[in-house]
Image (cartoon, rainbow, N blue to C red; front, side, top):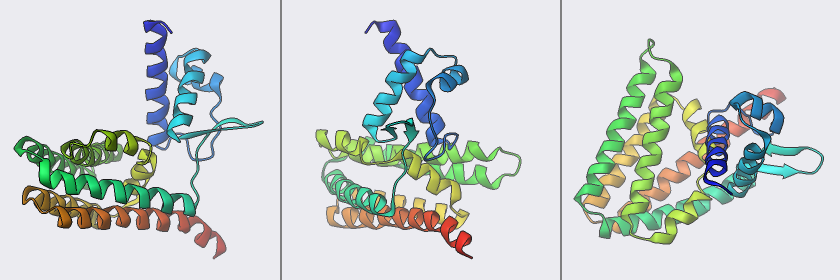
Length: 231
């Protein structure tokens, strides 16, 4: 693959992934190569390569007779993913409490502050809703990624790339109440304080509780359509 074609494939990957994360392509939706190519001004080859890469990430599934579709997750899938994520990220938090330096703590503080700024933007009626939501999602990702980096465990980051389902996280934030978003960032503060105080057990336990609250919020969100349909 030439450098130019690699660049087109990477651009296609980024644009399609962003569309999935933003909810533009809903779970279960077909991803038609020609239509996506027209949408993003791309040829079919980089789109096809991007869809294969997204399938490897678990964001897309390739189905017989349907082609590529946005991946959906059952309740069991969500429980499995979040249990694995909780175990991995709690280990990262424990190690970060032993190894993270002052610069790392400063980066956590910055992510927490950005999360707060996103909450404030969502309360401002003059600001488009996606702007605050994007800031919250980015700050949340930065916070968790900094803990993984601060753990000093090289393999954890690679494992979590395939465990943290970014569209699911984005979906949770999109439907959270202001109080739920503030509680999420409160957990960030408590985890940060435990890491800064070099308390690995507390940092790990708080991370597990934080991740499981996200799981419960997502399960409740998934249950809403079926409950409303049944009523």
